[in-house]
Image 1 (cartoon, helix red, strand yellow):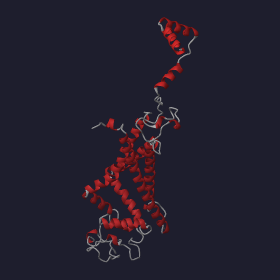
Image 2 (cartoon, one colour):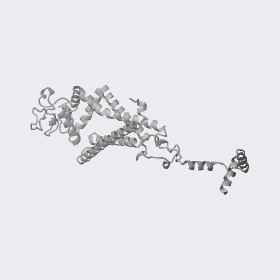
Image 3 (tube, helix red, strand yellow):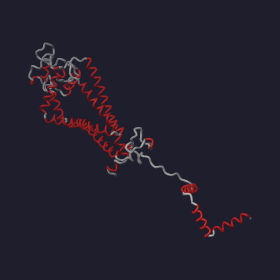
Length: 354
């Protein structure tokens, strides 16, 4: 089996890395475009019913930013891999490394400073609860989390007291209560009582276990992640491994292009440096991108002399000979006389006369 140093010199390895990275970038650019379209659609719908200013209550904005980053970075990698552009590939590699590093730092920080992270999430959720009925996106997300993880509020169910419709000094039907998504359901599919959380905020949690979920969603999510450590690790890998794969592919391909650019007989990277014109090169097999490698290279090869007949070869030799002087001709006649060639020639002449 050939070693890696020998394998990376082959054209098959070049094509494999090139098109694998290109397909990888193309898939992520399509995913980023889809996320961007969903975010734009959600933001348009949010603007129609928006009653509150601010970006915190706009998950659509997060989707738009995420889609833009994914699409832009992936397009840079796709164009760089397709055109063998080392600058774009280096940019793609650096951006992926920075993004992966930021995610790793954020995860480590969240684990090390768990209390501060929980406090930050709690204050953010309380801010969202305060404007719960002003933004449908946040409302739908929080309702899903409360029903999925059987929780209520951020830190506890009393967080709902900050909402103007739910605090206990109000006079409406929701006063001093919680939304129905916090209620305990005894049977699946039963008719939902939207006022099941009526007058629960002023009661002790020991008396509410059969009425509403008193545990906060932050603690519920942390407990679920601890109980399902395999799924948690799988989710982290699903986010990190594709980025790591992109870093490895772009790094290998960039180093491969650096090595190939040092060999002018491999690809046409150094055509301009060697002062060759494209018209002087045989670019068959270079592809539409004018960058695919070829055994033997694209540099001009000296033309070989055509095969000639023996007579033509003799004539060519005679043409190359210098003209003889008068003294050289006299010496040749004297040598022929000494060897008897003149007598033979004289005898042949007499025979011709007869």
